[in-house]
Amino acid sequence: MAIDLVLRRDWNARAPRGDYTQLDSTKGVKVHYTGGRVDPAIVSDHSRCVALVRSIQGYHMDGNGWIDIGYTFVACPHRKVFEGRGLYHLPAANGPGLNAGHYAVLGLVGDSGLLQPPDGVLHGILDAVQYVRDHGRAGKEIKGHRDGYATDCPGEPLHSWVRRGAPRPGGGDGTPEPGAPPFPGRLLKYPPVMRGQDVRTWQARMRERGFDLAADGAYGAESREVCVRFQREQGVAADGIVGPVTWRLAWEAPPG
Image (tube, rainbow, N blue to C red; front, side):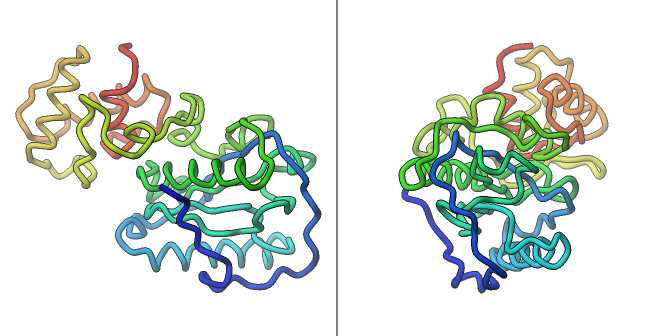
């Protein structure tokens, strides 16, 4: 799938307050998250993604005093990629002395609210990575913001994905991998108890992985406890919620 690029004029970006510093080439890309709360409602409402990107630009320009949004591109849950500073322009988000080394790509997840990156965000990040490789003289590196800089960014779920080699969800073209069911589209969490075939499918997979858990289709306290243990094993946010990342890891992660 070609990149679904949202140009600056299409998201009503403010004009930069000065001239960008030229960036001729980079070693690759640094991946970021917002560092704040992201409303989970953006997953079903793209207009909220647009509003969030505009608010990030405003904070960077008015709060940080930067000439523009600090990122090269921004990926949202709808697999759309917002043009930030764009190609051949020095980003500002990687940290002092580090901006010339990598382009900066933000995934629209945060440290609360929407924590687990939906597949659309991961696809969008990788679409942006391929775009800067094809058109922006970027190298092969994909790293997290925290790699070489003291920060929590891009958060545990995204950084765990980066450490695993930033795989394309479901394989190269976005189709589900054999044996890995598609994410059911809702977060499995407790309380209250959630019931359904999707719960039973996840519970059965946890049993296959060696956890003592009944596959009864009811996601309660016992399921949440198993989920937290599994998430800690995998180095992702241990929130007890089965989101897209935790669901995918249940099938893709090597046995513990």
